[in-house]
Length: 468
Image (cartoon, rainbow, N blue to C red):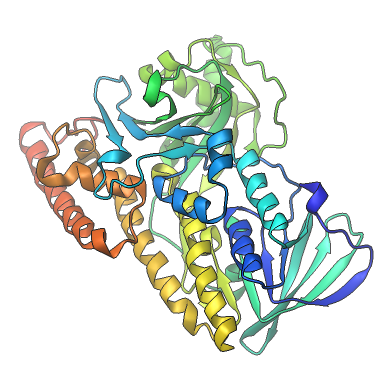
């Protein structure tokens, strides 16, 4: 990527059409769309690519966007296909597989599992090749305003070697969870979901399923949270767990007892990726491995697995901005909202944001209207999809609703509805009414199931054995 990065040794002032804050999937995709449309795009990324990220499981509706960006062949060459999501209880006794080919819309039967360092660098390379001026590693320090209208940015090299002021009619905040612009404007609002924390690493030697199932994401529920297991084309696997605040408070004690008793495998990291995002702590490995060893389905798949780098942790606080756009600016992806990662919606929503917002930005240039009027449809469409995902996320942490994921029958097409959400087919008006109807029915059925469990199972759910 460094071959495409622009360097500057002194303070400069330039004119552009669009300044993009952040070079992740939403920033790179937006820059590509707009540069190809003939606009002068400047992008600032504060980290040096390649760099590690989680959020490695794409969804089928990512594929039309990647095709528009001209990356269809690269995706096939670099990454493994993902045909389904498989949900399991902690023992592997109850499992439910959701092939994407059985969604309401069957035109997108697979997605990909990606190592984000490679995937994100590919997207940013593509933006640079499309004509974007990429400054990396550079950080935006300020968004310039004339009244309420954004008019540009001020950025500087991370090594202090230069600074740049960009005057432009449109600023795109694709800064991810740092939410550069929204946080400064006071738009950030926490969402009422119980806070949870993820612990993760990459592993070599994890068992993958054979054949078409080799690319399936495994989502394993247990009473204190859930595991993900994401296979890659090179044979490695991303393994992580998202745990409740209550379980997290036991981390220190669990890690100390496990290490003192010598119950854990010897953890030998190969140093393959020490520049991993997240918080490192000596207790993380012990906490992660202790939990793995107590989840039989995960432990069986990880017999003899070698950990690639020390386990890291990231706190998960879901939030949403009260507005996603205004005069001369727009917030995309995680800069606008962050969702719990259980349904792998992050990369899809961030790239869908780029696709929809880019069309609105082009309209703004064509009409000369940068009031934010053209971005209202973008905000409406993205919020609509987020609402569905948020509803399912809340359901996932409801033991009664979670039981429905493991029903084998497709009663009244409810399994088809779940598959459609897992595929992220939330924008096509030809299918959306059908999907929303089935989702409402699904939640009604969850309430009936809750009553049944209280009457006949002493209030304990089937999958997690937790009170409903």
